[in-house]
Image (cartoon, rainbow, N blue to C red; front, side, top):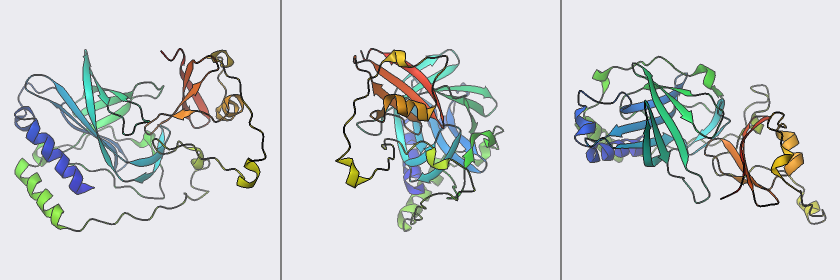
Length: 296
C-alpha cells in the first residue's frame, strides 16, 4: 500500500509542475495534502492541487473496504486512489467530483473549505452529515494505522494540525523511498476477523456494508423456493418527511429490493411503482430522505 501511495504522489508531482513543486507565494489555502484523522489513524487522505492556470485536480486515498455510517468506522481493508473528473469553485469552497470506482457506483461530490491555519472541513453532499474536520499533513501520508478490533468515532477526529513545512519530503527523497519500497517484499495483509466482540459496541453488525456491496441477508435456502414472491407497492407519498420511519420500518414498508449506490455510506435507491426514484441515506437505525421523484 505504501509503495503504491508513494508512486501515486510522485506521478502527480511530475504532472503538476511548477505549481505543485514550487508552492508559489499566492498558493490557495486548500492546496496541499489533507487527512481525516481519528485518534492516531488517517481514515481518508486527500491531495488537492491547483496548476499555474488555476485549474484544480484532486485525488482521494481511502480504504478499499470498510464499514461505516458517517459517524463511526471499522473493518478497514486495502486501499484505493480515486481521482476527480471535474471541479467547481463556490466562493470560498472547492467542489470536487470523484469518479465512481465501479460500474454500479455513483459519483461522489465533496466540498472542501479552509477553516483556519492548516485546518479545513469536508462536506459530503447528498447527506445530512455534519462537515468532517480535516488537518494538513505532509505529502505521502499513508492510511491508518488501523487496529482490527477497534471502532473509530468521528467525535475523536483531530482538529489541530501537527504540521511543520520542514517535514515535507523533497521530490528526490520520495523517489528514493519508492525505489527502496519496490525492492522490499510486499507486507502480508492480516487475516480479516469475522466480527468485533459483542461487548465492544452493540449493533456494529448493522453498520453500512462495504462500498458497492449488497446488504447482507440471512435466509433459509431450503425454504426460499417454497415462499411466494410478494410484490410491495411503493410511492413517494408513503414517506412523511416530517415523520420518517426507522430502518426496520422502512424495510417492512418497501422491502429489500433496492440499489446500493454509496461509497462508504449506506445510500439506497428505491424504484417506485410509477417509475420515480427515492434516494435514502441510512445512518444506523435512522434514515434520511435525500430525494423522491422523477428519475429524469
